[in-house]
Length: 184
Image (cartoon, rainbow, N blue to C red; front, side, top):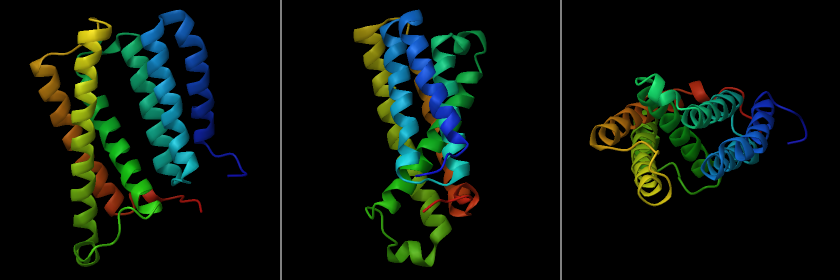
């Protein structure tokens, strides 16, 4: 970790977003940007591949600004696209970290069908994380700020998009596409 990588600029942008977003948009925005800043440190801490690091960090930062600036209300389809991309990339990063720390091992199934196993595990991880996110949105809407957009159609659409995004990310991860530029 002694050299700068492209995603380090996104991490700087996440820090600036927190410093600007908290006073300009309030506590909920500050919490969102704090979460994003913490999230952008994870791929750096685990030496994630450059492609995964940069796309993940940029996606979660754009997702945060889209929420704070109400882009999801102005461009209704953007919510589904961002849920698909963010959930997929978060699931891929979680899978990468689990393998990196030795929690997820190459089980017999993974040894015989590595691409399939990675796709299934990443999809399952992304789906579980999407459910946790939707519970967080509900909690935020119910107890923190009623402007947080929730509803049956929104939740089901977000979960479906997240599942599809996680599947695509799992296929990309299994094929090595998101592993290019891996650092040791």
